[in-house]
Amino acid sequence: MPSSPATWSRSPRQRAWRRLWTHRPALISAVFLGLVLGLALAVPLFSDGTRSHGSGEAFAEPTWTHWFGTDVHGRDVFARTFAGTRISLLVGAVGTAVSLVIGVSWGLVAGYAGGRTDGVMMRFVDVLYSLPSVVFVIVLITTMEGYVKGLLGSVAPALEPAARLTFLFVGLGAVSWLTMARIVRGQVLSLRTRPFVLASQALGAGPVRILFRHILPNVTGLVIVYLTLTVPAVVLYESFLSFLGLGIQPPQASLGTLLAEGAAQINPLRVRWWLIAGPGGVLALTLLALNFLGDGLRDAFDPKAE
Amino acid sequence: MPLLEVEHLRVHFPVKPGLFARPRGHVRAVDDVSFAVEAGETVGLVGESGCGKTTVGRAVVRLLEPTGGSIRFAGEDLTALRGAALRERRRQFQMIFQDPFSSLNPRLTVGDSIGEALDIHRLAADRTERRRRIGELLASVGLDPAAADRYPHEFSGGQRQRIGIARALAVEPRLIVGDEPVSALDVSVQAQVVNLLQDLQRERGLAYLFISHDLAVVEHLSHRILVMYLGRIVESGPAADVCGTPKHPYTQALLSAVPVVDPDSKRSRIVLSGDVPSPIQPPAGCPFHPRCPVAEARCRTEVPPLHSLEPGRQVACHLA
Image (tube, rainbow over all chains, first blue to last red):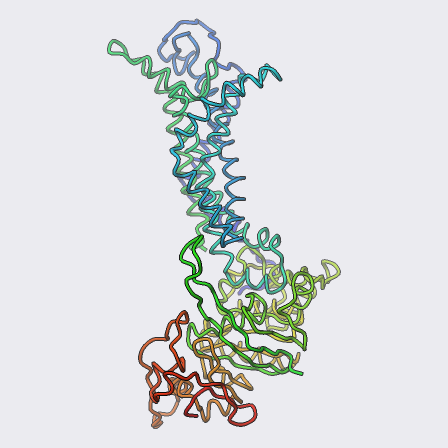
């Protein structure tokens, strides 16, 4: 053991971030995601893509003024793509945040309480798992939407368009925390019988101290990894629902509705490929980058790498 | 009055096949175990894997709720205590663990792992004093006080075990339960840790309940030895007597497995056949009879009580 106080001592977390720094695909993905996020935040400031501008010509092929071409109403697809990316990422982030909050606390409580509490909580998760989640969200949206819209319309009419977005948040959040809860619970189950937890109990530490000082810090690595894999899953889910017409409503756009519009323009006479290539490319590359980043994080936080 | 007095301790775990199912039976991990540890004394607890020795240790430091019996510490029954009262008593008995790699939280610095003991019991008035105490504790187990700022992964197994000992010492306990504290270490490091434990006992008057399957280490370290088999004590007595003239056939078999550094030694090895029976359905009569080389008819039907041969020497065998 080198014992001079001048030598720097790194915590396991600092070492993990350093390992990530050397993981090339993850690093490139992180840079790419930063770029997409920047565009998604910046582009809608200049044009939200809901109105036509410039020439206003419909179905223009990609040019220097319209990088991704224009759509049926002469709207710039580039602007619409990044406005859509903003919505898609927002839904992805909120869905993931819900999965973080509910999933982690559910898993922590179930795993730490153990016994009957654990059994009941995890059977509840099993029941939700066994419901076809697409059907669940569709039923939720179709049955509850009219009621909530009416309610919102009487209280705050300005918020009415946000009703659909809220449903997406709730619906996607409700299905995305299940796996997180299972993962966290499994990890807690194995951590709570580790000798360092027993040692803390023998010293007289209470459950709060053990959960927050000994267990939570040892599941965060896993949680971070799983979060980066949840974001693409939720984004894809939202795109799928929007593609079916159950997601974002026009004139707002998400990557899914853009793809649906593009797909509608495919006919035997003419394929307007740019309507699909732009949003599809951004969606595919973003999902790929998120998965690469998750991969890099998993390698970096792997306890066996210690 | 002994420091620790365990009487008729029983720890049973229900075997449940499912969430709402009734228990199908009980694992009798510890069944009617009684012993005492005097202040400043080392009591060795030996037995093979699954005999319940770790369960005894965990029940003593109140990591497990006993099913029955009593555990008295300095005359006070601990089994009745809960909450803050129990937390206060926990200062007097601590535990060191077998695996030096999982006994320290990898996310905490060594100083914080040891400091947790000081935090819980409010033993350090401020940060400076906390730091000073941690430094002293590290020095007392033979480590550099600068180790406090490092993380467990930077230490070897023997060093981590010393850190675990420093953590246990932080609350100035009177009894330390060592659950196989040296069996995961290299032989050369084992000797160092055993010597450290003996030095600490001399300096601080500590009592040890030393759990191990290694009779050689236990004989070296202990004043008295308890031999456990299938949740029961089968033999107890002063270390020299138990190891010199074992009375129970199980103890004899255990001792015959200890390697002897003497090529001319003619001692024959008693090899036990079969496995340890299930503690869910222990055999009728003497729990050892299915594997006993000298079992008789009554061993199969009658449970031999733990009876005294001479003061301080007990054995549970019909033939002894």
